[in-house]
Length: 185
Image 1 (tube, rainbow, N blue to C red):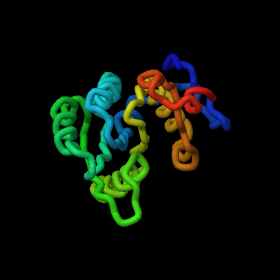
Image 2: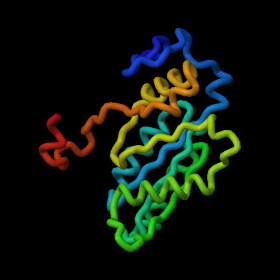
Image 3: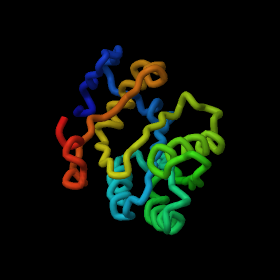
Image 4: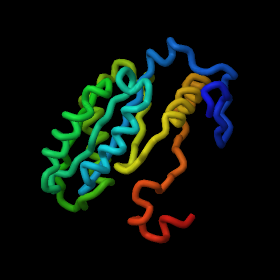
């Protein structure tokens, strides 16, 4: 999207011909949950660098890292990332998941725990003004995707509550390390 043309959705969401108003954008915020397990600080830094480069990151974006207690150095990783990136976002937080009986370490259990912890500490006074997005640790999310989400949201407030909105996966940062079946669709 060029910021002036409504994005295309499937199934079709009724779209306003006008981009979101400044008032709308000032009231709405995005929270990005990034679960990870044994991901390198450099990889997470790439993801956060791209997000921090979005024009509204410091005023509208929250970042919540979902860590694993079993991972050696998880606390140090959070401290390093928060020291580097906290000033570039409206807020930044984290959770550290300790495995319960029967749980497996990894992204899924860390995501589940992170979202539950986020909801406990979240200011839910205006939940309709917050859109939660889950990102892979290696996701380089383009600013245009968030702009498209904002346009969809401004066009039909309820659309973000009854639709799952997801960007196309682009395996660019670690495509060589992905299993062959993941690389070919």
